[in-house]
Image (cartoon, rainbow, N blue to C red; front, top):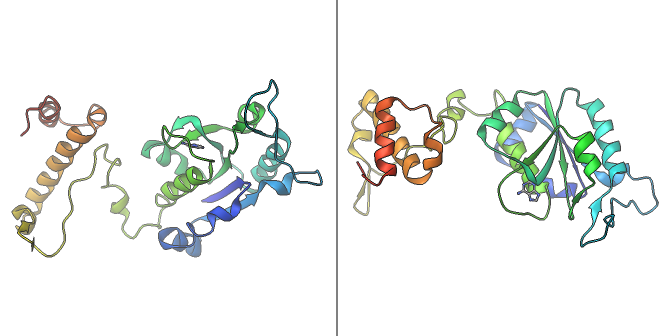
Length: 245
Ligand code: ADE
């Protein structure tokens, strides 16, 4: 999968992509990440990328011409890649969106800054707008890193075992069950006996129940879309009503 990222601070991306799983994914060729300086698509002597808003008001607006040139150039280099603008006004990012986007051959990410980008960029040069949450950051760079990270780990071959992307929080529509490793007892805190029992069917049932209990307590909003059986849904509804199991 090929990522092209348009930013006025391309250097922000260096260290987050230089470590761990993303680094390995790049080194193995599973993903390619190209960061671009928007200023390279300016044509004035001062490489200006923003200007005052028409109609007045605070802040600056990112200009349409450099962004339009950048998007046009990168669409040719990354054919079939949707163009996504990172903005707090976008569609909330989640695992379903990550999976849908990861099915593309690439993604072009436009990092907004200042008060926003000229509306003509959104309307005519972007295919979608993404928000990573209901809070305002100083720009789209950190959100672009979040999106690249979430998609990269879904690219086949990037994670060690194919199952590890399936079992985790949100992939099943539920939060993840609790994990434990050695020692079996730490300062009197014991690992649940069932996990030491060696009975894999029972362990699976316990994990599923724990995932449902945890989701019902912490994220009851996820329960209705989690694909539960009737019995599971009854259990979840009890927890949500405060009748703990
Ligand atoms: N730019 C600033 N804040 C943002 C957010 N929450 N999501 C995406 N882009 C942003």
